[in-house]
Length: 442
Ligand code: NAD
Ligand code: G6P
Ligand code: MN
Image (spheres, rainbow, N blue to C red):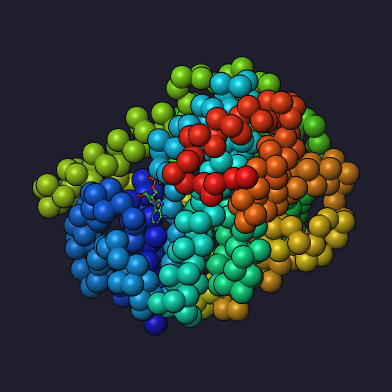
């Protein structure tokens, strides 16, 4: 089997060690000859890099490993770039969440004004990675899960239409793992799903087993009572009570349309009042992650580096990130695996904007994704998607044109925001907070 060279961009990410352990666990399916990290924060990346050097030496010493902040060194000679950067890091996520909340509006990483602010920071960062990849390894593919994926995907569609970048999200994977548990299946891969929407904004319309039996009735019965809450520890990422609330709230989201099963993120658009009421303006998800996952991962990594051994360390294989290996394998070995990806609509959802970036099932092979036909979707979903896609497109236009008005329109159009007045107040605060990251708007 051919061995591949992989670059993780955003080497200093809290998810990097879990993904590295997952890659090492899957070397039989996806052999790696060289693994590199790239980040623009040398000190942050070094902590993770030193620990991963130990993990790799212990588990797969034949894999050549290095980390760097030099783009040429990083992006030369690679086959795949796995990208998960967070432009502005956690202190900016904290502001994305707290600024809207101060105005009584949902404060969330990827939804509403917080997601828009994050999008305005991410576009430039991700385009820079794409350009490095094309300069130094023109045949490589980028598997991007840097958020907000919807806005990043629209930006790459507009500005780098011919680049080999695939945008993907793990939320459907997380939901499907729960569905498999509800159904008593060994693996989510025993289900064939039909799903459509935008990223963090979609619905399952059909779920069947391998024999073609309809699994929706049993799932609906569970979701109507408990949302996606299951009584088994099946997820190493979405563990805190705040995530449990999100999985539980899917019950109320489902009630709005019992023909489909919703993505958990729809709660922010359909129940924004509930979300705001249940948010702590002083302590948001960013604080939870900084005090939890970030402290834990960096603490464990420092210990591993000091001891030169991972014995006794509590870093876990990020099992549910194995969809990234599935995607790399699909391209490397032309597996034609069916996966949900964020791709140009081009008629798949027949009554929706052909230029929208939609999240739909695709067959993935060595030439990229072949999107599947969805057909016409119902008025409720269509109305919501038309509004939300306008938000995402306006953000990208605002970034390209440096337009204050377009960004104000984008925030005003978000279903999470009550009026243009509130949108303007939030925007003005966000501009001040993001002065080091956004283009100057006029
Ligand atoms: P993190 O802040 O711990 O890590 C991100 C890293 O990116 C940091 O080390 C930072 O220095 C680096 N970085 C920032 N800007 C950069 C740039 N321009 N060039 C190179 N490196 C840069 O964040 P995290 O919580 O580990 O998340 C990483 C990313 O993965 C986020 O965008 C998050 O939203 C995303 N994510 C996406 C999914 C999905 O479903 N698509 C799932 C999980 C995480
Ligand atoms: C899900 C989403 C990601 C998002 C993450 C946030 O996995 O699909 O897009 O980044 O949740 O999780 P966190 O633990 O950082 O709040
Ligand atoms: Mn996601």
